[in-house]
Picture 1: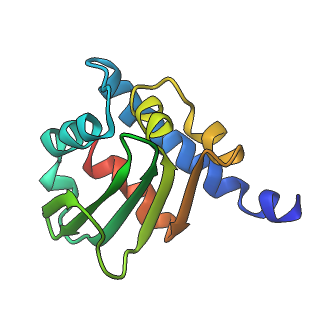
Picture 2: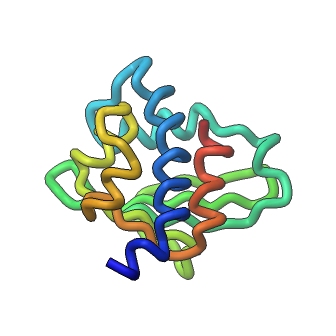
Picture 3: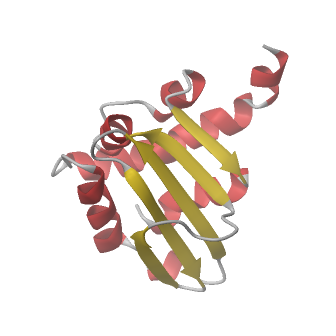
Length: 134
């Protein structure tokens, strides 16, 4: 319990950071993780990624799961299936939970608290994901 309370500010911030992404995706709900990443690709904001250098890894379990990564380098990004070396942030969830998060049907804070979403790495960079992919 002490460990959870120590991370409470981060968990709340992460939950709020994921909420706007879900709201945008809810306009045209994604059915599969691939749809979520396609929507993220289309919504990238290069102006909000200037000066940012980060590697995100997404590890999703389940029949539609898999591994994806995003690498942001000063306003440009690369997104693909697979693993990236030395990620700054790793998001782990089931395929269904990742889609539910993106569609606004699963609250990010609740997902983290219940272990349905695990986030490893830089808390600051984790929160930047929604700024670049609103």
